[in-house]
Image 1 (cartoon, rainbow, N blue to C red):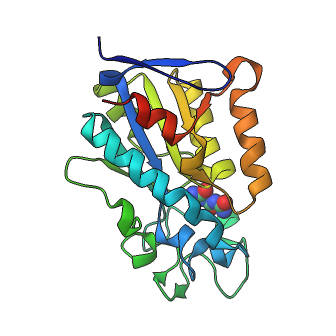
Image 2 (image 1 turned 90 degrees about the vertical axis):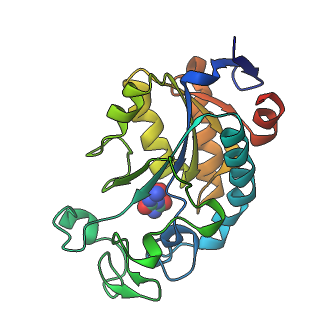
Length: 222
Ligand code: TIU
């Protein structure tokens, strides 16, 4: 009961809705809009916008289906006590983590750039995980929340595909969660990396997870 099967690569993927959560990774102004962290690293941030409409549709469908929905945000404390120098030292010396930009201090919690984009704003009851790293399990209470809700399957989407989405899926995989990745709900500053990431997820009998798209998911969610 409550089990659905979705078309996926490398094979159809079945999951029970009560034990499935949607995890939306780092759909933040800092990565998607101009003047944030993504641009400070030299990226064309407009490439990430393609993931917004599919994420909106999937988010709405997950809410309607009564699934647990969670969001993550990458960022650091204002005093940057949780920001390793090895991370801060990346990118242009004039715009680094903690420096002032048009959306406030770059990648700092509480600043406008750290917010999730308005199109995907969390609603009451949807946990938001603030993480200092790329992986959503590192130095967070994500696993605790998932275990308490008896979640076994994660639908993982967001940005960027080969960085925070991939790292999170790998972490989840090692913790025994099955991951389903809707490719059109993920995006990268590098389309080639996005494409290869999808192949890496599903290779070797879904070694990290199963790949689908939002249309396939919308067709099976109640
Ligand atoms: N730079 C890049 O592609 N990504 C990040 O720094 N963080 C996330 O992926 N969220």
